[in-house]
Length: 296
Image (tube, rainbow, N blue to C red):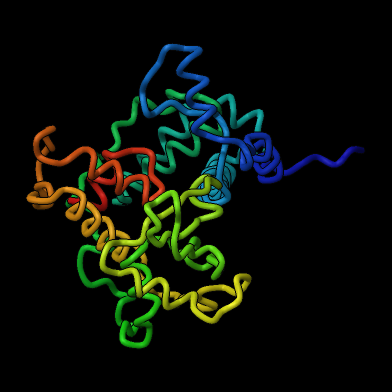
């Protein structure tokens, strides 16, 4: 008798079919917009384009599958498909009652919509609105801050203030990725991110006034050496990305202050060109995300 796959194995196998790690999400979205005429940012390619997204989505999907198996006795994916809308709605409502954050709930629903390939899955469930004021990460002392001593890592912190790199990006950065005089940036120092968000490379101009914080990490070292062999576990990298973003925005928007921290932004509340330059340096495609989470 042939061995029957478990529902967990079936779920993992299905996630494998959505693999698009080495494909450009940007190009895929552009092709969809050209074909369908839709111009919304929320267009999905139906694929997973980064290892981080795969890890997060798999965690969310398997959490739901385990719940459906334990709560409703569903042991085969075909049966789960038949009841997907009903059970996902029930699952989300349960988590709303448990007080899970709007961001966690949104991630759960996005992962399950991709998994079941149903864009309107559980649309009957009204998720709590995501608000900026509810974000606590990097906006005040966090519990893990007491485990990190900034005084022990001055070179790393100054480097992050100068470049705004993500944790994974600075962890994988090689000495040869620091360019002392980049001809494409008026012979100014830059940092080459080989594998950024979504696997895309980018060039990060070093923040004006912090050039030596970056160049000091290059002098006298071989190109194939990691710039920072160790990154402390409890370092809040996001806060330094915000510091970089705000400093870069103010440099490119002389005479302006940071946009208002509350309320809906109006076009004249911020300098769009400056925000665009910050967005590109951070490796984001969406100015609204950068304004909401970094510049304000």
